[in-house]
Image 1 (cartoon, rainbow, N blue to C red):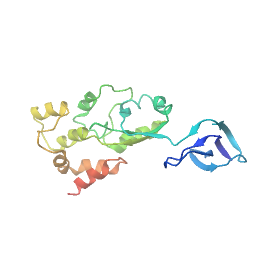
Image 2: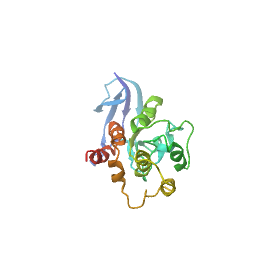
Image 3: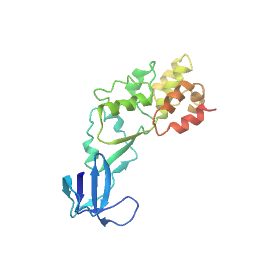
Image 4: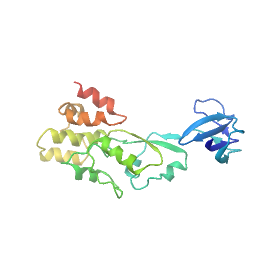
Length: 210
């Protein structure tokens, strides 16, 4: 028996093919049947006649990582059909976090919602907070290059006043020094990032293998 059945709608499958009349059956949190489900019993039936049924949209450029901690239902996105958000854009993500520059991390954000305490260190620990506390949509986490600049600087030793000014301004550390150089100086960051299910982990892994 299905938990939910959506019937009578015009189904777009996301491949670019024209819409077809089809029903969609859901059991648990998975789509288990597509087609004529008129004989299939279901705990709940939604009549989608005259409507279009489509896969969830992916918001490829979002900054909801600064809002989702306070708004787990994400209704402003769900009501538009967005079911996956790619966050960590524009060079800044909430993780990884170094102990030395935790307060600087908080200062980067224009808005820090309640509960966003930056107590995590790795991306894996950060994403676990989403899993433990629940979330209405899927999140694909990018690792911000601006965030990465704060962590390897800590591993690189003392930070002079000029470097601190440039980090706080979210500009290039020491001007011409590339972020890949800084990453290459510490594999502790690389191991933390690689261990996390982050979208950008492969690029960091390549650097840390050098």
